[in-house]
Image (cartoon, rainbow, N blue to C red; front, side, top):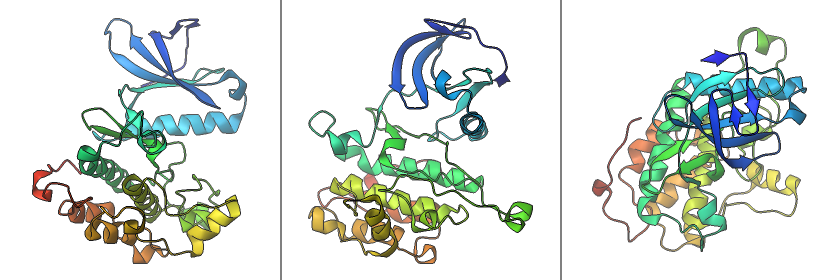
Length: 297
């Protein structure tokens, strides 16, 4: 549902009571809110007033909201209401109590890696992304920070700000270009080259994410942005077993297949990943794969 009006006070936005700030960002703020009447909890994302006059920022914000309203999958965060306020537009989305997957990597003493649930977490994230691809969208910013897991191991993929469909038709004919966007540690070679969006880019970024979740570090590190981008373009990653000897050979091989330099050399789809992954153990001391339940995809 999209609306035009907005009622804002110190502790209210529209028909919602603000409970707390979840994440104060550089361009927007995310809050936990409760809807009047229903008492349902949502996350509400609002563009900062300092960014509201920037037409590009407003367009990108609306783009994210509309994609979130279109996509409906248990492992993708869903947008419920989009308010096109002329000063500070906002939208509500699923409230999902959890933490992003970078926290167990960056702060393991505070957020221990959910090793026993990791197989299920990766499977759910892949299922959500596979659904996005089936609907024609490429996420273009797959990374641990954009995968949220609850304490029970339920997962939502978030943040559709960079999502795009392939460039085609008149846009391609008249030289439509894709900006170089993405997070440097996870960006695919084709994104670096500003090529048309395709699921293969997400497969690469998801492979980098799977590498980091098992090893505690991404495959490439560098002292400068250009050096890091060059590594994505040219350098062969070390086996995962170099960094973590408990990683199984089958998981090592599957992840390395996802992060091949050429898209044609990678897995064909995340559906293929899911089919293969469900028979793979991540770590040598993991239970047999048959003990891991499958999910929708």
